[in-house]
Length: 491
View (spheres, rainbow, N blue to C red):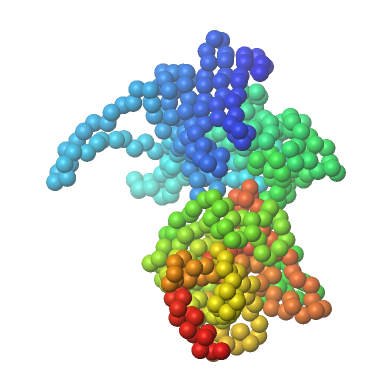
């Protein structure tokens, strides 16, 4: 590709459409950039060769990207990979040899973005002390602001409304996408997995891979950039929607305040006061990716159904995490209401939380069904599935067993139960529950009532998505002969 006033550029992409390298040729010099990505396509690190501003044109690790649940910023270490500097060895008293390294503040840039992902300000990890009282003491600190940008609705930068310190460079801008400054130096061209986007003319360069027949295949954000974002360049989705906005949409379902009921239960478990004291997801366990919850139904984003989640990742809770029934219900409902945290929770086999389901009404019912299916009728199969319901009699039974409405089994209510022989002596029972707006509506089964809409999280939207479905998987083992004896006796 010929560049205006510059020269040529070439871009290379992987099979999924992610950019993996680019080479910009100007004046006989080729500056090459390589992108290291994880399995999901997120940029983890960037390497540059022949950039005169970095280690005399030598191969340099120029960026390491920092993530939480969404992008947080970039560390710019400028590490010479081609001729690495070996750190000095120092003797540490009573500890042997160590290495001496300098830590330099100001190389980490954190992005401050709005509900659409637009990067408005970047600040470094450095702060400046301000003294105003003539006491030779710092009165307060100010942030080290590296850049600031203001955008028109479709992403074009406002003239005179941008600010950059010296040669400070941040790769991302409007819509959380990478700037294509090689093609246009004013920061108004952007690249993503499925498009090159020109914010000046409000059009993509290629046809929309997921066209909407009602609008042009070159249109973007469904012509509503204040409300929608398009992180990958293939389909737009709403930006951040707060709990209050969702409540306004769902609070009146045939005269029933569905989310009001959900919020009331949450407040009775301790509400935000308890939730803010709880452990975070990283302290609770580890996240696995892939088909992490195989029996749950994976759903496209935006599906309005109570039986779906995105099953490509799950939080595997550590076996040694303990809490009260009310504490677990508060934690799960808090993340459901706020639309944060893991979408799928998997509790360990016979762990402290799974054990709270051992005597649950739906588990006993499923085991009874398994006994009839397998032992009496001689049915064989890899796995037995029971769609266990939780009616008024079940709730009364649960209250009699737990002496409290705040039990895990009462919180779960109806669920899918899977029973499988793992050897000739042992049954593995898995209870898979989805918490949704639908499950919070206690009067939905009445014939004159409509079921409220339940929402599935959009995996391309990194903002909180309140009141969207989340799942929990509880796992227990049972002695098979004991179960057979139990139900044989009851006949």
